[in-house]
Image 1 (tube, rainbow, N blue to C red):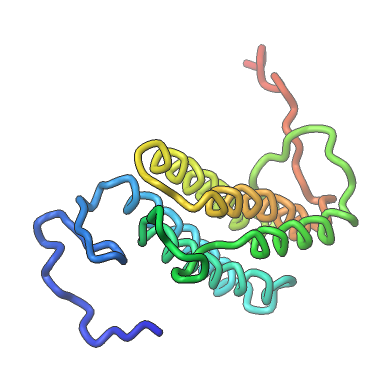
Image 2: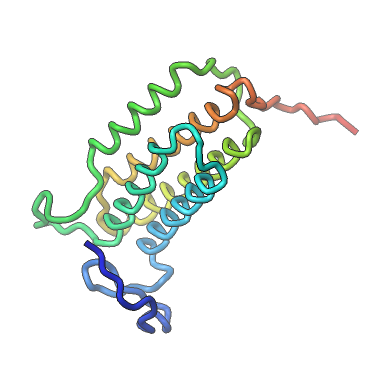
Length: 192
């Protein structure tokens, strides 16, 4: 359980922040950048939900928001070699599998694509596309972090699947894909 009695501590005034294991790092450390981008992604989903309070798949999106706090908690505490399974909050394969099931379920009714989809369409779809791109950035940040420090591999897998799910949801919100605008390669070349 998290208990916050004070919102400001002044301990970060000099450009450092505390990780979940008590260590301190610079605020631009790759670990902080990674969980910061995950927080940004969660906020984008919050905007989507606030603008569309009765949206289809609302419960799925809320569960993903909770998962994203799990991702942040996982990233905030560097794994150790002697860490006992279950001793820390870590993203699990089951959380990834849940996303895969949702992707399969939602994608089953969509028409196959013949080109890339231009971001936009219905406002809910546009927010999903924005969330998808922030998710891809979070995934890249996790890859950067993993080059210099240990990271639970399920975090990267989760973010990879989540970006796929957000793409599928955007298509669902674009009238099951019928409202998608497809990329037409070279369409404006030679146009004056």
